[in-house]
Length: 257
Image 1 (cartoon, rainbow, N blue to C red):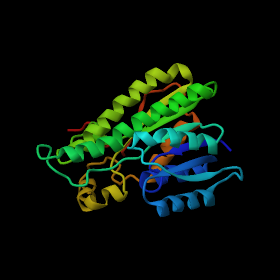
Image 2: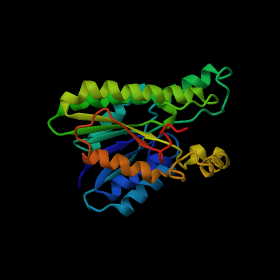
Image 3: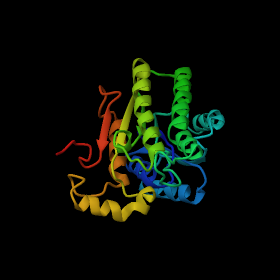
Image 4: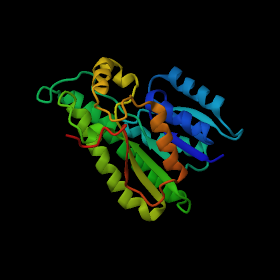
């Protein structure tokens, strides 16, 4: 068995893709979820089915990452389940409930998205880093933030989402600089247009744009594309690249005329 990893928002979408890829390559996984226990248990079942080592373990663990008052209990439960933790994947995130123009966006929507996408991951990372400091830092640890192409590309009808992901990009730089000397590498994985529940409401729009050449590789991304990238990072494939941004977007980020 390679080690143990926490994946926030692991019950479906990109999170499920990450969990499954880690299971297929020898990791034990904590599948974090908020409300949908059935989806979390389905992810857990698929992980168990695809595991390659009899010693791998999979735990579905409920915690609302946006509620920072729950972080202490969550971290303690994780370390009670696994004596040591090798990586944290900050994947949990939401889109705004309603796509409003940036000059009409409500404060309620802004705060909700920021709490889930930025505030929660930031302080959860802080808490896990503190726990690693207390326990042991002689072995390499990894923290991966899953952000979005929206951290640099503007969508004026979901400004709160873009701002939250831009904040994640800075959080990666901050934690990478602070934790580098403590054997903790921090990375940002920046997905492009990924086929998940979050993009299901705009599938026709993106099908058309992809057909018209928006994505140089001319296809949607899939959760497994993100999973393979996260796995490579946690495997230690980029040991001298803490703070790096890895674009997983089929070339969407390339400036073109």
